[in-house]
Image (cartoon, rainbow, N blue to C red; front, side, top):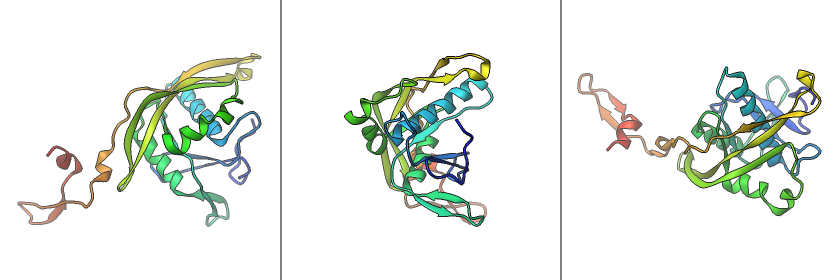
Length: 209
């Protein structure tokens, strides 16, 4: 397809993110052949994970969430997006293992697997959800139920001079890393024996009690 343009918010927006990940893909409208925005987001995540595995130069993990976002304009008058779904997706990604695709069960998996969307699935992406669901922390006092996604995605081979496509597997069914320390509220202070200065007790120490 055509190169992404940050100023084009008709289908999707690719932005640098300050939410703990290198980039954020906000899908606003599914392209032709995709039944819903959730499917498009999963297709993009699968392609990125497969690309990283093939390149052997970096590890990519993906966090998928759905919800309302707001389009705003930054100081350079370029479009940007904000919303709770973006922050939640970043936290879900933080919990994922390298090569893993994690999706919010309530806001992403359920809409994706609705009967209407299942009837029109693209032949270039096959996936299945891990039946095991995981409870993770996505914010202070906020939890989310997530599922791992695995499958195969078919990429075009025109870059190699071929005419068809090549199918590659993606996903990781290992249990995600639980960032439980995010739920420790309020912070606990202790006094340093030498300096007398009060400091926060490390989350690892609190969890080991």
